[in-house]
Image 1 (cartoon, protein in one colour):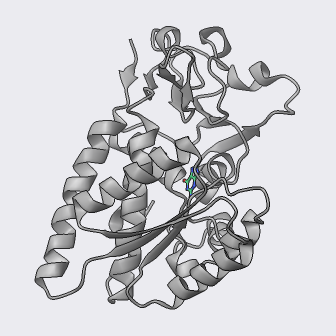
Image 2: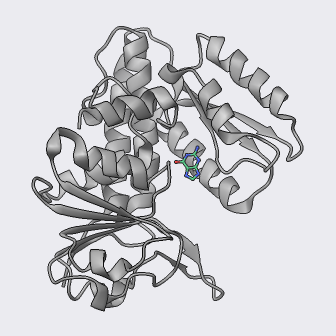
Image 3: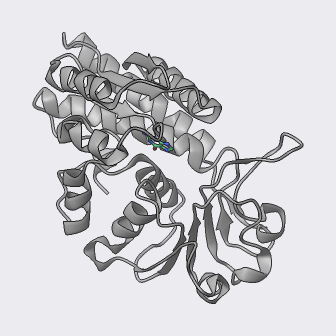
Length: 294
Ligand code: GUN
């Protein structure tokens, strides 16, 4: 039976730690950290994610400024709002929940966020810093959360064969870059056009799956003692929430596995808080947050 990588309890521990750190800054006379969260439209999943993020902010003492815009908001209006937030000294971080409505150019919006306030780490400047090994950029929340979770459980990453399924800008690609940094691990990134997925998953020491398809990875597709990180969040017809992997069967074969829910999801939110506190610290002349030092 595999070790269950309990993201829920680690995220809780991190929130408690951040709360006491924020308290100390406030006792010194600094204002609270602040995060602007922008949601365009009414996608139900996005509304849940945004609600979770704001609740977590509140718990640790980060003021969240919520800007909920209608589905038909023109791109120019969104860009104007971001420009104002970029210039606002009292706003530390800016997060635009994705996906955006089709009439809005996502990459243009991401690029309009000031890189110093880009707590999602999606701005090309932060992506470039991650890819070139510069340590002063912001690392996207899901890869950062996964890294912190693996390290908490002492999972060795050096010289491992890491296989990532899903090549998104949000998870797959930055996750690959993080494992590649300092020539740490050997990374293969698979995606929907990969000819023979099994050929790669079977060889993985660490398998990260971020596709959004229930049961995409079954127990026969992984080797014994693999470490499985399941980023998928899928709602089945019967209401159950499942990941992209066959958790019940893989847990009998793997060395460690993340559950869904309670694995990667809470760590992603915790990393958003870490990135926000880190940006805030630097604004007031302190070094970046040690948890971002991966
Ligand atoms: N949509 C799905 N994941 C994310 C994320 O990490 N950040 C933002 N902004 N939108 C998302």
